[in-house]
Image (tube, rainbow, N blue to C red; front, side):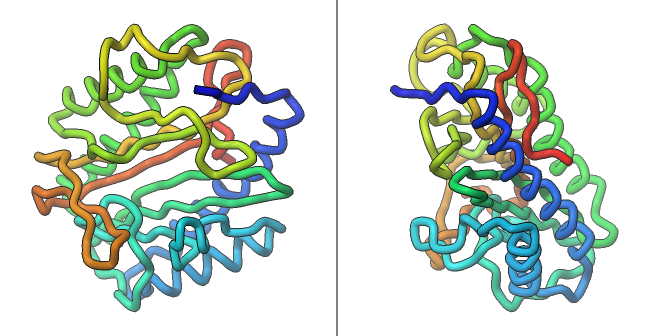
Length: 252
């Protein structure tokens, strides 16, 4: 497994691509109002990314037809924008990628539409809190499997389960690079596999299910739900390992 070590100048280029991710997500969050369609969100996101000089990198990636993944309620990740109009009480995951001068950015949030239930507030908080926790414990010398193990333990301690079959990942001159970083321990011991080193840049993205982590892909060939049929949540940051700890690049 060849995990790239980035020079400070390269990390700065990745930071610039990810700043556009952060700005776009913060902009789209304000547009998640009752009556707004998913296609409108997608168009707004695409135009905003382009206005900042970048390219929406998800459009056409592996055949994905849009610039913004819009995952509503039971859809946890990879939702395709449709004519569906948001309703009071919905929750919607927004996941975007950017490409700026050959370097990539990636990030995601889950947003409540209008007044949402206490249960959904907790569901969203688990994804965000898991991400914050994971970033906070990263140290040089820690193994990626150990990080996955700690993420899973945290999610389960909150009474939820991680979505299986999908993972965080490296990022750089391509939108997805080595390593794969599941939100659970997949094979072997936490003390096995590659170690985290200064200069590595990768995306962490907790994907939260309520009862079952088994994924199911819908007829559109993209939208991923849990077999439990319940709502899920998703948060993502791109981080760089600098001076021994993780710095968030996808944050304004």
